[in-house]
Image (tube, rainbow, N blue to C red; front, side, top):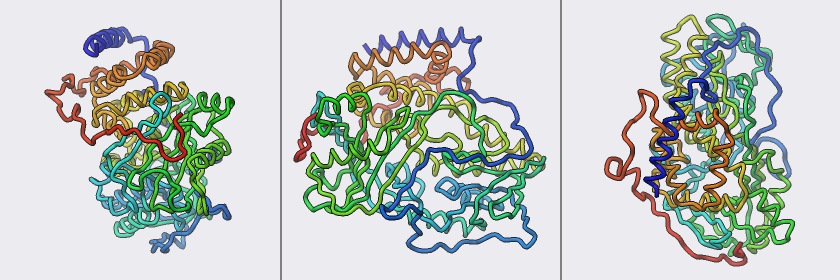
Length: 539
C-alpha cells in the first residue's frame, strides 16, 4: 500500500510542479531591499514567555551577579561591527560567536542582570554536540507519551534522554564567553534605528547613541525592528506552568521519566468539559526533579485564538486533583505564549533577525532553543563573511546574511513543518491522538528528525509523511486530505515543492532501508506499556 501511495503522490506532485509556472511559492524569498531611514521601535507584541513568583511580578535576579564588560562613552557614540539588540539566549549565543570571530560587538538589553525567565527543556542529543550538557540541571534517561482515548492508559516510552536547562548556568556560560571575546554590554533598550549607507545609529532608551555596521534583532517574538510579510496569522502555543513542592508519594509517574505529553482527559468529567476537551485539546508536561519537587505545565500545542491562561490553569489543577497530587507550595508560575507558523520575515531587509525575531520557531512544535544554539555559529560566520565582502554597504551585508539564514532549502523545510502545524491547529482531540499514535511509531530518525529540524532533504520529508499516512486512522487520512485540498493551488504547489527534489542542490535518491539504513532504524526504543497511575483514570 505504501509503495502504491508513494507512486501516486509522486506522479501528482510532479505534474503539479511542471504546471505551476503561474504560481509563486508561498513565503518565498522576496529579493527587494528594505527602506532606508529612521525606524521607530513599535509597541511590544502580546506573545511572551515569562515566569513569575506568585508574590512578585518582576524579573528574579541571577543567583550570582554577572561580571559585565559595560560599554560607555563620554561622547555618547561608539562604533562597532555588530550591534545585537536583545540579551536572551539567542542574543548572547550569537554575540559570543561573533566575538569569537574577531568582530567588535555591543549587546543591548535592559535586563542583563536578570535570570532567563522560561523553563527550557531540550533533547540531550541536540545540545551534546555543542558542549552544553553542563548547563543541564536534570537529565531524564527517557521521555513518555500518553494519549488516552481508545488506547486508554497505554504509554509510549521514548528512550531518548531529555534535559532541563539550568537558567543561571546557561546565562553564565554565554556571558563568560561574551566577556572573553570582548563583547561590550549596554544595560538599556533601543528605541530608534537611523540607517545610513555604511552604518546604523542606535538610539538607546537611556539617551546614548551608538553606531554599528550591522544590527541584529534578537528581541524574540516582540520583533522590535524586523519587518514581517503580510500573510497567514500564526497559531499560538499557550501554556500555564508551576514549579511546586508536592507531598511525597503523590506524584503518580516514575521519577526517571520526563512526561513529554499526556493527552488523557478523565479530569474533564462533565459533558460540557468533554466537549471542551475535544474541541480544544491540551496536554500536561511534567519534569520531576525529586519525589517532592515537580514542574507541571498544561499546554495547548497550537490554537488560534490562543487558549486563555485561566482555562489552562483550571484544567491543570483538575488533572492534579484526579491524580491525587497534593501541592504544598508554588515557587513559580510560568505564562507562555509562542507564535507558531504564520507569515515569514521579509527577506532580505536592512536589520538582520535571529531567534524568534527571525521566525526560527518550529511551526508545528514550538521548539527553538536548541536550533538557535546550533545556528549561532553558522550565522556568525555568515555575518563575518558579509561584512568582509561589503565593507561600506550595510544593506548588502544584511541581505547576504538573510539569504543564508532563510535560503530556499530552509524555506521549503519550514513550509512542510508549517503545513503540519496548520493541520494540528485544525483538528480535535480524537484525531490528534490518532495522529501522534502514528507519529511515534515511526523510525527514530523520522519522528526525531521532524522535531529537531533534521529532515533536510525533500524525499526525507515525503517518506516521513507517507509513514504517518500508512500508520494512522482513516479519520486522520480524511482530515489530512481535506486540509491539503482546501489549501488550493498555491498550497498544493508549496507542499509539493517541500517534498520533491525539484532544485539542482536536492538529493535525488529516494531513501530506502538499503541506501539510508539509519533513516529507517528504530534508534532509541519506543516501548509500549499498559499502566494506570493512581487516580489517573482511563480517558
